[in-house]
Amino acid sequence: MEELRELLSRALSWADAHVSAEEVLTDYPAELQGRIIPGQNYSPYQLLEHLRIAQKDILDFSRSSSFRHLNWPADYWPEKPEPPDSEAWDRSMKEFRFDREEMTILIQDESKDLFEPFAHGTGQTLARQAILLIDHNAYHLGQMALFRKMQGDESRKLK
Image (tube, rainbow, N blue to C red; front, side):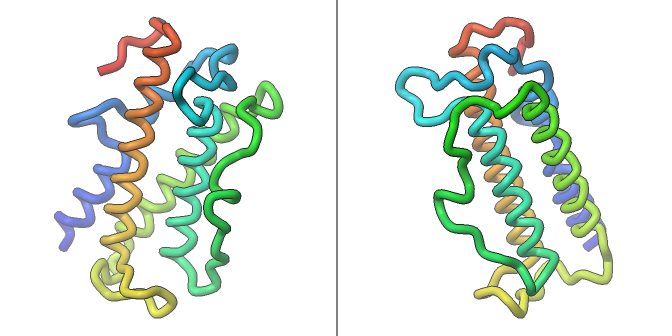
């Protein structure tokens, strides 16, 4: 079980087969953060916030029976494409990294059974929530990497 805990924990932030969150999100040009790319529905800032909000939601559900359900999709996506201020991107990244670390700590907690269904759920387990988060983050980080390329940002050479 220790090996599985370690694998799930590493998978939350690895870049073995794709770009890491740090690679794609760090130094994202401010002038591109709030721009919606033609043919897309969201700006990079909205995607970053969605990543942060969804991750926090998965973490909160996994930690507590007093979890408060968010309304889909309104609570998961910021309404405006632009960051509200010049520090918003960095704040969102900091919170994203913090909550990802909190999920890692939860997975590593040997007092938590990875396969015991949560009493407050409908069969969800900590292992399932970890895999859900890994998958969700990888999907949207791939979008973010593509967005950077589509926006012509060559400041980072992404995989």
